[in-house]
Amino acid sequence: MTAEGAGHDDPPHLVRAIGLKTAINLNVLNMVGVGPFITLPLMVAALGRLAIVGWICGALLALCDGMIWAELGTRFPESGGSYLYLNQLYGPQRWGRLLSFLFIWQLLFSAPLSTASGAVGLANYASYVAPGLSAPIYRMHLGMHTMQLTGATLVAMAACGLATALIYTGIQTVGRISRVLSVGVVLALLWVIASGLFQFHHVAIGTATGGSIGTAGFGTGLLIAMYNYGGYYNICFLAGEVRDPRRVIPRAVVLSIVIVALLYVFLNVSVLRVIPAAQFAHDTGALHASVVAVLMQRLYGRWAGLLMALLIVWTAFASVFSVLLGYSRVPFAAARDNNFFRPFGRLHPEKHFPTVSLVVLGALAVFFCIFRLTSLIAALVVTRIVFQFLLQAFGLLLFRKRLGESATTFRMPLYPIPVLITIAGFFFVLTRAEDLGRKLLFAGFLLLSGLVLYAVRAMVARRAITP
Image 1 (cartoon, helix red, strand yellow):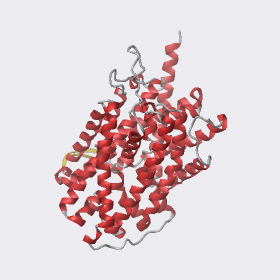
Image 2 (tube, one colour; image 1 turned 180 degrees about the vertical axis):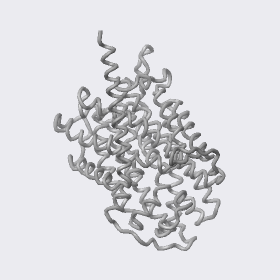
Image 3 (cartoon, helix red, strand yellow; image 1 turned 30 degrees about the vertical axis):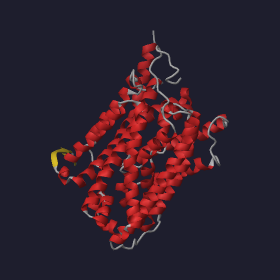
Image 4 (cartoon, rainbow, N blue to C red; image 1 turned 45 degrees about the vertical axis):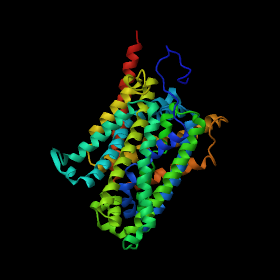
C-alpha cells in the first residue's frame, strides 16, 4: 500500500519513494566509496600494469551475480534482500528459516564492519589534510595486539554518527541527500581521470612496467575487485521502498555495475600514466594510503593534493551513508518475520524507517572504528561469499528447478550460465584468498554462534506456546 492510499489508522509502513535515478545513485554511492582510492595500489601490486584485467574480470563476475540479484529482487520485491531470498529459496518452513537467520546474525558483524571500513578510509585521507590526526591519543594492549585511539579514529566515529543522523531524517529526504553526495563522488573520479589522461604533460611519465597474470595474482586481483564492486545489490535491500521494483531493480543493478566499471578502468589507466606500476611495489607509505592525493600533488602541487583528499573524504562519507541505509532495512525485515529479535522490527511512527535497526548498526559501526582498516576488511569478502553469494546462487538453481520461470519477473539472459559462472568465480576467489584459514575460522565462529542462538530462541519459543 502506498502512503497516499493508507488510512489514518493504518500501522506504520515503508513508503515506496525510490525511483530509478535514486536507485542508481544509491548503488553507485555504495560501490564507489573510499575503496578504489585505497585498494588500487593493491591491485597494481598484484597484477602490475595488467591491473586493468582485474577490474574488467571483476565487473564480469559482478554482472553475472547481478543477474541473480535482479531476478531475486523482482521475484520478491520487498525489503530485506538476502534475508528474504534465502528464506524463500530454501523454504520458510524448512532450511530457509535457519539460513536466513544465520545471514542476519553475521550481518550484525559484517554490516557495521563494512560501514566502519569506509569511515576509517575517510579518516586516513583526512589525515593527509591534517597530519596531526594520526598522533595517538590512547593505547590499549589486548594480548599480542595493540589498539590505539587517534584523532583520525574520532573522525571515523563522527562520520558513522553523522550518517546515522542523516538517515534518521526519513526516506523522503534520502533521494535528495544521495544526489548531493553523488556530486562529490563524480567530481573526485572525473578530476583524477581527466588529470591522468589529459594533463600528464606536467610531469615526466614513467613506464608502467611489470605485471603478469598468474593464478595467485589474478585471484588476489579478483578479490580486490569484488570488494570494490560490492554494492551493486544495495537497492535490493530497499526493494520495499522502490517504485515499480520489477522495472527499477534490474536496470539499477546492471547500470550501476557498467558505470562503476568504466570509472574504475579509466581511474586505473589515469593513475598508471602518472605513477609507474613499479613504484607501488617499493613505496608502501603515502602512495598506498592516499594514492590519488599524491597523484594530484605531483601534477599540480600541494593544493591539489589537499583538495583531492577533501573530495575523497566526501566520497567516503557518501559510501558510509549508502551502506548504512541499505543494511539497516535487513534486520527489520527479519524481525517483522518473527525470525530475529522483535525490537529490530520497529518503525518510526511518522518517518517510516526502521529505528532500532538503524541505531544499533550505526552504534556498532562507531565502535568498530577503533580497529585498523586492514583488520576491518580482512574477512568481509570471504564471509559474504560463504553466507550470502554462494547460498543465493545455489538456492536460485534449486528454486528454478522446483517452480520454473515466472512471466511476471525479470528473465535472466542465458540462464543458467550466469549462475554457474558466479559459483565458479566465487569459489576461485575463496581458494585464492590470502590467509584463508583465519578468515574461514571467523566465518565458522559466526556459523557456530548463530546455530546456538537460533536453537536457544527456538526453545524459548516452544516454551512460550506450551500450556
